[in-house]
Image 1 (cartoon, one colour):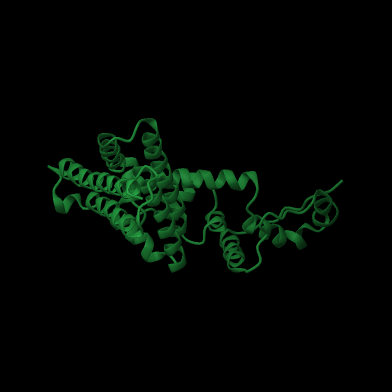
Image 2: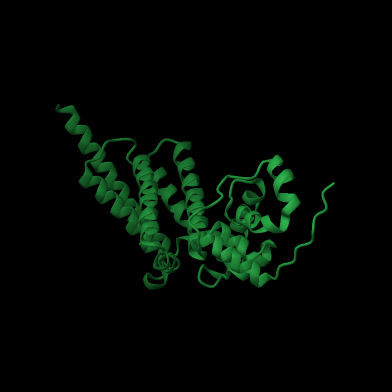
Length: 265
């Protein structure tokens, strides 16, 4: 029979160790002690191994509990960001809503900004999948493409999405993130835009120059959407539609141009 001793620890000490483990190079990752190791070595000398167990708890990831904690954090983080924005959402408020220790949060994410980057990327993916599904539902006529893009910009203006596409909020995140993460995010963003370009061009191979122009047009439309206050909200939908129609006309003309070139080959 194993008799476990009660080991007490203040929150201050707990947080100190959590921070120290996060700064360590060595992480537990998916490692956990076997049942025999726990039974034969750890339990009999629990006080001796308590920091070892805490290290596993703080730096291990691949457990069902950890997965549930991360999903709960992202779910509540999304709600708080929608309400307060990234900058004005505190980790204290987040962990309180999730009923987990603050050190537990830093076990998963080094900073608040890295956390919100992951949340934002999931939202962007969600929106992209919505628009991709719409593009696949019907033949891509000019009117369908225009209407789908107009619908996309209506979606990202909804309260539950707005903050994740707001230029000022994104700019705040990027200022706080390591350059490597910003570059990685730009690559992910480029993949999303490339997928949109592929759908819009109906798989026709565009030259690098024309593809670059089209990518720039799509990005500029997103920038217009992020500057409603400057441009004016009264005619915003009409302005967006005109820009989208211009983009679609560019694509349509280029597709016909490429087809004519193929006919002469």
